Length: 115
Image (cartoon, rainbow, N blue to C red; front, side, top):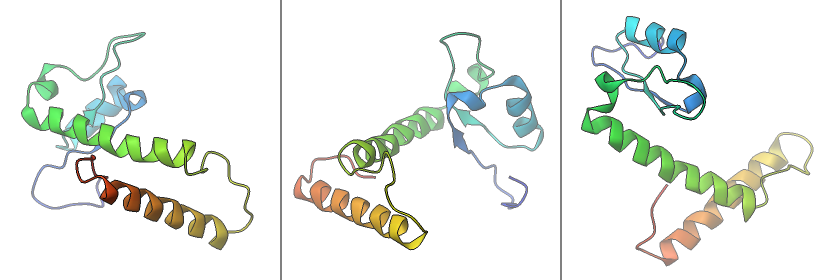
């Protein structure tokens, strides 16, 4: 976060596993607003009403869900769950081709959510 710099507050998004008290307090100490998903399943979340009451938090969570859908498609339909390729160039090419295919399918249906 320090490397990003700038004068505006930044709002990084993260999974609920990053919702620990230490991580969230460290981000707030750096004047960073953590848009971490709340973990309400097993224990209390460090993300409280200070963050969740803002409309930007809801927007951030909706965007996270849209991005997640793209990767779910790539893993289930696109075959990226388990790489069967060796090296660096071939898996990179497979990744690019998978998401190019996803974009073609998405453009076929203009009402679909974009990534």
